[in-house]
Amino acid sequence: MRFTNYQFKKLIRSYTFIPPYIVYMIWIAMLYVYSGQSILSSYASSTIVLLSVSAWLTINIYQLENNKERQLLFIQFNSKLNYLTHKLYFSFLTLIPLIIFSILYPIIFNRFSEKVSIVHMTLAIHIHVIVVIFGVLIGTFICIQNVMSRKYSWLLLILILLISIMRHTLVISLPVTKYILWLIPPVGELIQIYQYPLNQLISIQFLLITVWILSYIIIFTIGLYYLFSKSEYL
Image (cartoon, rainbow, N blue to C red; front, side, top):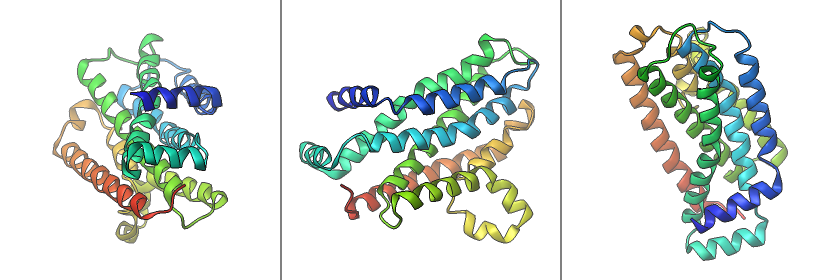
């Protein structure tokens, strides 16, 4: 809790949370200019930019400390891995307001073609939380990898984000890419299945995709901890 308060103070003083927040709020306002929109597909569309914003804000959070401050935090936590855990937790925490804003904005301004049910709300939370987690994990990976310089890291970030969103389309267009793209977060598949009507969405396919995504998140997280333990991140 003390570390979380410390991070909140540093983040607020740095003002680095403002650009991602503003960009996403503008995106939501533009997305819901017109009323009468489909609930699930609209929520899926709102997460396209949320993925990028989540990674962006996460990178900003990792850059809050200088090298000396980071070293002191490693000592205070008695482990680099504890530091990573707290950073992941705090990054997700700072993105919760955007999840809430994204879900409630179209409801408050009556932008949907039908009434939002509990099932719709649950599915909306489901996709937003998963996309935010992916954004946090991708942003963390960009920060702790030591292969590319900071300039090229941003190019790598853009590439990963684009392929994550377009993955489903790429695999259909070029089936051979599925043997390579399994390394990329399956965000596109989740967004694609949310284009279905509610009665078609709740299916075995949805369950399998969810299990696949959760398995991917677990493996990705374990990989990040391993990479961080071996890296010279300062």
